[in-house]
Image (cartoon, rainbow, N blue to C red; front, side):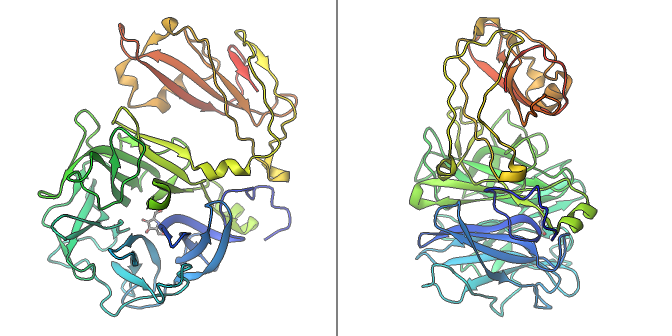
Length: 468
Ligand code: DQQ
């Protein structure tokens, strides 16, 4: 790759060169965090996909390891070792389920096990001869080009393992349910865990419990028999490249997942993990820190030419902790606490009163990552807002926050907002991105409020209060 690499990241994970996309099998094992990711060892565009591997003790500093799963076996994965997940079996042994594209270009599911479970770095993996353990056949009517990305397994009180595999039937996104007694022999269930019309292909499905009423994390196999949990079903929508989820209830007896009443039936208009570029995310249960950690791929919008020129493509978002919000209706997602230790040279600005249409310049921050690999981490609190002035939110707006942000950019005044930040601002303000908020009353008589957060790269005239 050329010397001049202005867009390499400062502390987001990316290998030295070549193409990366989507996560696979993140886990923590004997105190070591494992990151497996889709990687093209031969170039900086998608292709020749294998499972690359990196390890870390703190989710921040990473050590590249040898490729964990190559694309080598004609009946398993010779045309690509695609995405999948890790499951920690009772007794602590990790096992990987992943999609391989066989010599007939069919998508099949394979299992891989560590060669040496006493090695916390899990450098070597073997592919047992039973593979593939799930295949599309005429009788199961599975479409062999839409059958991929097995989830982390969960064990019911009946000692039966379950996993979901992403698929579609026509325009209906489907989470195919498979069951097994031994994690090797799998049988497709006669009905999917869930499906939804209109989504198209469900890639990288994930299904996991979340604790109700606290921020505790819950092991994937914990059931509502043991704890007060809700379940999250997440899917990556191939048609629009965004990750959606719903929160709901699930019973091991029926293996039926029912999204919260009132929440959206299907993925497309469900809730999003992230309203920016984040795709093919995977999460794992970090029992040592009592948290669920989410990893996601920042699917770049650079062109193939640019990717070839710069010699790499793709960045991983910083790891985030997820838990169920106290409303019980959506997830709370925050960068993991380890990210804060990357912070240096703090700049504090306290108790400034902002007048309408004022700009308050924050000095001594050079946050252009381009040259010096520094990003500004901003924590800000706005106080003293007169909430009684907030306009009432039109309920139809709730399912389309992006439309609201596009319709009312940062130049459109409102009763309580917009106010916020101008980031990545050049000295003369020729260049900046507005990150701004508007506060609404949830209903006419209520004292519940909703905050709309928007980011706006258009440089519109200032009619509102901003910080820089
Ligand atoms: N990318 C993988 C697939 C998955 C998709 C192939 C997600 O397994 O469905 O590289 O971006």
